[in-house]
Image (cartoon, rainbow, N blue to C red; front, side, top):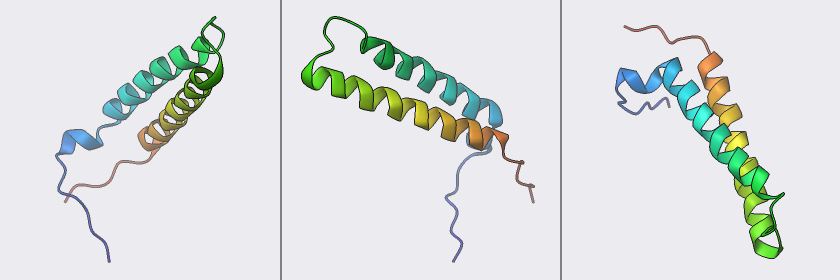
Length: 74
């Protein structure tokens, strides 16, 4: 069964995917570079690691979506 959410066309625009990926790289970089700071101990360290790597993983996902061929419109 194929079910597709009725999303507006701008949500499938490649530029939007690249913009969201860039935001994820920026936010993830803040957490990854936060590991190098003085506060990087205990739970703060693990929080920065998981949030940073998670944001960069999401950026990879959105770049992959941007690289997919466009779906034909009916």
